[in-house]
Amino acid sequence: MLQAPLTARIVAVHVAEGDRVQAGQPLVVLEAMKMEHIIAAPFAGVVAELSARAGGQASAGALLARVEADAAEQENA
Image (tube, rainbow, N blue to C red; front, side):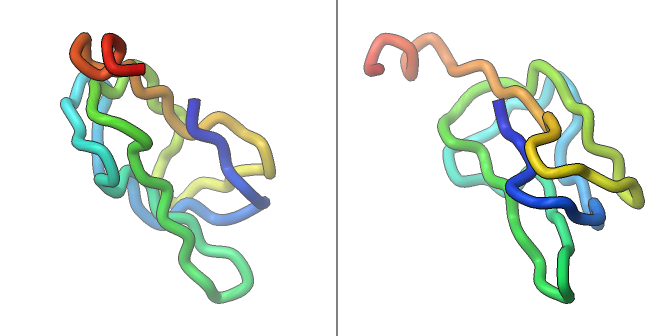
């Protein structure tokens, strides 16, 4: 579960639900206090849920996306 670390404006969403992602891949870009914050995939998997919408606002702690790990990732955890 990827959450907004602070209240911010969502400036970009680089994925859609169902997309396969790699560890470290940028998913969402937030902007707060004139600084960009990149929310990246913590591991390889599939975007199972996406709440972030470009141009929207995110409150601190709000769900942005949920990534389900690939089977190989789950075996290594």
